[in-house]
Image (cartoon, rainbow, N blue to C red; front, side, top):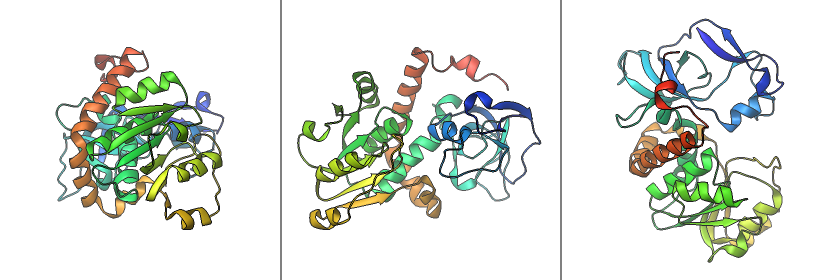
Length: 301
């Protein structure tokens, strides 16, 4: 079978399409569509926090059809699924049962492939690590990217009011399309807020941004650190947490693997806005010419 392989860490232009053996494992999925995410870009350059030995197959998320499934699994050959599975930029991928989910009938393979990494990360940040409660106000830094738009939609599904923080007016429009209740633009985000917020999801990083985020929190508010797209890992004095009774929490989606039942419950609660949101986002990307039309995207590999 064919796969996109990182042979040298010289960026995306150095990725090669190569023939590789079919994957082993009890759960294997024939990939019909695969997502492309920021970690993929970093991995082609050797800049991701988790390094893989060369060569390796790229990709974190896919949608497709089950080729084989473990005995006793709720999945069967032929089932449509979406999966968070490393090495998904290939014709087949060995999937993990805990992060492989039935693909709802209304969603296309392309829409399903847009869900796992971004939306499970958002779910981990908001529900598991952020402890989000209905009616709370959430500020999302980097709200126009993949995880950012997913965080807006999952937060809405969990009953929150969402403020998107972005750097440009163009990105503000993306955040509004994703469902943000309001948007703040530019570095002075705190001066544009109507008041303190309960939860901040930070995808951007940077010490000054984190300091301002802590000042923007309501008492017992939380900042959840998800990524560092700015390239700067922030540092703070922890007395800021003590004096203001606030928290800073780290989040990686793999926390969901420790309690898949809770993950499914939370995903079910938030899924209606997520389903509508991911369809709207994929449609918008098609309008922009960033992904192909459905017939072309769903063609056989």
